[in-house]
Length: 189
Ligand code: SF4
Ligand code: SF4
Image (cartoon, rainbow, N blue to C red; front, side, top):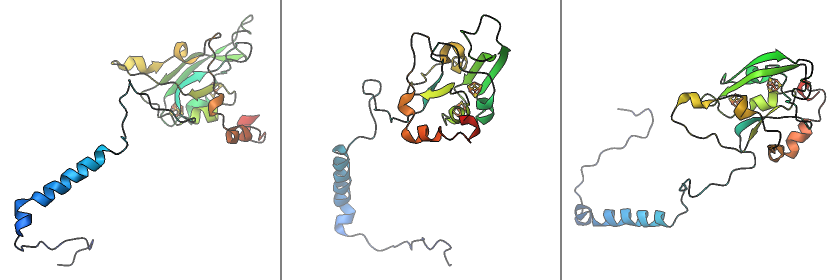
């Protein structure tokens, strides 16, 4: 019968030679392969004793940035949530009250902002969509947990502390900075 893949092999019933019958050459060749792999560079690391070096463009735990004066940059426009392919972001918009200018940069702000880290695929589209440079992915890890609830990150885990700013400049490569100069692109205005 004609083979469609042309990869079929005809089974041979030919008699095994003496060497084939004692299996010794096959065993030795298997051992040689094992020894060869012993001296190869390991593909795994013994985490947490050994930590792998992250790429400069690693995308991890998000941060909601504050401006130079310490006010939250997010204006709850929702563009990050719309851009998110995993539907991981939810927020509630609120109006800034008189006297809260030092807390929130714009008249509207996110009174709640949550990211479901179990849904997030760390694609970075929320960062790209944000017109206010408010959300960035950082080189921080999202830690493991035993309960699902622990993975809903609210503002307490996302907004940077006034006295503990998170540096996001590492991932702002020259290509990204160049892109941000194009004023005709709506989210660079
Ligand atoms: S990194 Fe991607 S998946 Fe995660 S919240 Fe942002 S847009 Fe959604
Ligand atoms: S796109 Fe930026 S400003 Fe708009 S809601 Fe998301 S983080 Fe806030």
